[in-house]
Image 1 (cartoon, rainbow, N blue to C red):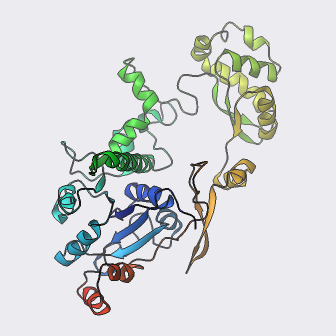
Image 2: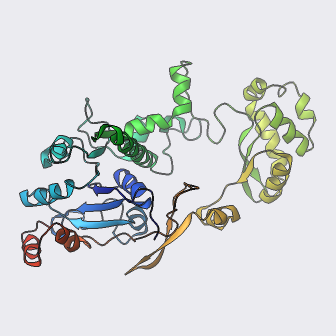
Image 3: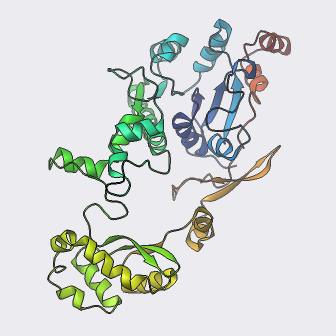
Length: 397
């Protein structure tokens, strides 16, 4: 396996559920030595499954690849002592506890920094590290609601709708990975680490970029637009004889191409549709007119015709259709990893390509079994077999 860009960094991963593990996965896939620290099975109420499913389930296997696993009881003095031995030579610590938990466990940033001032300490909480909601438990859907996303998602008049993916978890995980890398770059100048933190709520608000600017700058409270683009018309979902397609023909140039492609030059001079503003005001009628045409053509015919005319258009795929698509196959984002028990597993690869660096095309390691690497890691810290057996007997590991 060639050297990967982050292979010089060691990461101690205290995270669980999804947001924090997403950060760890980003770093692990690009080569960081990520040590996933988990409670011993005898002390884990969730019996190794966690809230995202059983350990051998597809979600867990996709989320925790390229890591090594060490079981450690951080509530015990011996467990914390082992953790701080690892801190001495680590570069990053990741956690997504509720904001007060790390202090109770005595593994907070200041405690870690006293042992290793070069540590970059990354945190995700539901609502932030301080403030009136700091100690509240938070999960993705709560952040979707509180962060405004559910108010702009779904069909108008049908009530709030959650997005179909855990977007607050995923985005906070990606934002934290970006923050950790920024802090590691800054450490090259300062020689010291720092505490980097974000939250589900902050990440969700940041992802509302377009709608938020309409409020902060224009004073407009955006509402639900369903499958239509909030401001650009015609852009949305249109029926076909065998399904649906997305068509984006907003703006005068694309609208002209679209009308010419469907043989309706009269729609260019119709008084209700001559400008972007008039098309937006008369969106319902315009969409209905377009739907009359698209419903008589297959999805493939429309995609071909619109592509030929230079108008963005695409099918609405189910997940199996996504991975059957020739462009998706060409991009190679579906990867495989070999698991000792489960065999060959398909997982989602990285969406990033670096032209001058080795790519993590072949995933190095499957998701580890709980504590799979405990003995090897403890031996590297100087513990012998008898000492390790004693730690296990005392439920430290």
